[in-house]
Amino acid sequence: MVLNPQAVLSAVVRAAEDKKAHDIVVLDIRGLSVIADYFVIASGQSKTHVQAIAGYVREKLEERGIRALRCEGLKEGSWVLLDYGDVVVHFFLDAERRFYNLERLWGDAKKVDVLVHTAGL
Image (cartoon, rainbow, N blue to C red; front, side, top):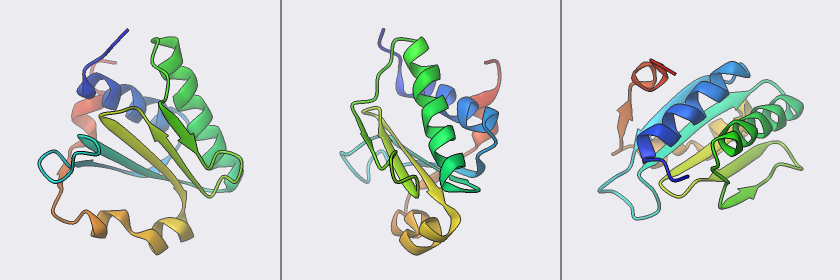
C-alpha cells in the first residue's frame, strides 16, 4: 500500500509519541531539497530507548504495508535514520542531536505543527 507523505508522517509521529520520543520536530523541506518532503527529528533517553522508538515506528508502518527504504544506525542506537522516501526520520540521543543540529542545518525549513498530524489516528 502506498500512502501519501502526510499519512506516513502522521503514522511516524504517532508511533514515536507512543514510545515516548521527546522534542519531536517536523521540518517541511519541500522546495529546499529533492531528498524528501519532510524530516522528522526526535530524541530518546538512551541508546535502548532510541532503538525501541525506531523499532516501533518500523513495526507500525509495516503493519500498514510500508517498509523503510533504508535503515541506518539501529545497532548503534545513537542516531537512527529511517528513510520512507518522502519522509526521512532521525532519532537521536540528545548529545548527538545537539552536535549535528539538523534543525539549524535546515534552518530555512518550515516547522510543521506536530499536533495536526496526530489528530484522528
